[in-house]
Image 1 (cartoon, helix red, strand yellow):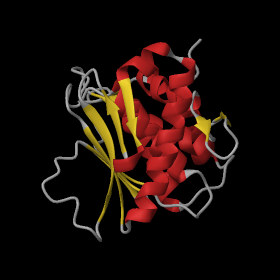
Image 2 (cartoon, one colour):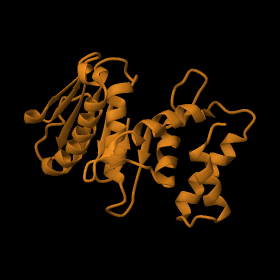
Image 3 (cartoon, helix red, strand yellow):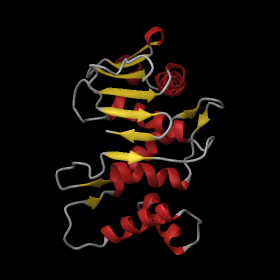
Image 4 (spheres, one colour):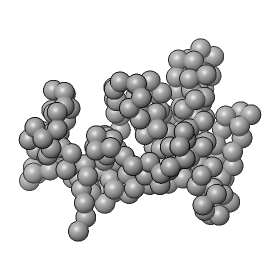
Length: 210
């Protein structure tokens, strides 16, 4: 039996079992409503959502180096972004806005998504530029370092991952040698976003965009 952690959270929010803000409740209601629509361009692919959730849970929390157990609301965020697709597999949601108090694991989720897209991303198939973006370079580098630590842990566990990746700390870049994709840190202060074609962006403070 497949466990749908995304929908399970939505049901708990709508029923009042879990307390949430008005906007979160509305997002949960939309998720449940759209799953029951008979004629709709998109459908919720539980297995696809779970693949990304399960991958991110393989990654360690940098401060403890223990595997990350995602909270229910984090599963809903990830599942919503990656699980809703059309019949061709195209994602329904290509932008996400995440707003929460500090120390609630936002950066870890975003770095996890970045590592996922570096290793398993397909949009585009080759030469994905995954940007960790913040107002200052120092903030962007903090999130990039989380992704670096997570990738290093995978490289230790998997020879396949080690052979296909390269870490270059001096220029803050993580490479997928097989398809020429890269995770880079960017800041607004240095105008280093100019000329960069970012296929996946992670704003350290607020947002995920693809």
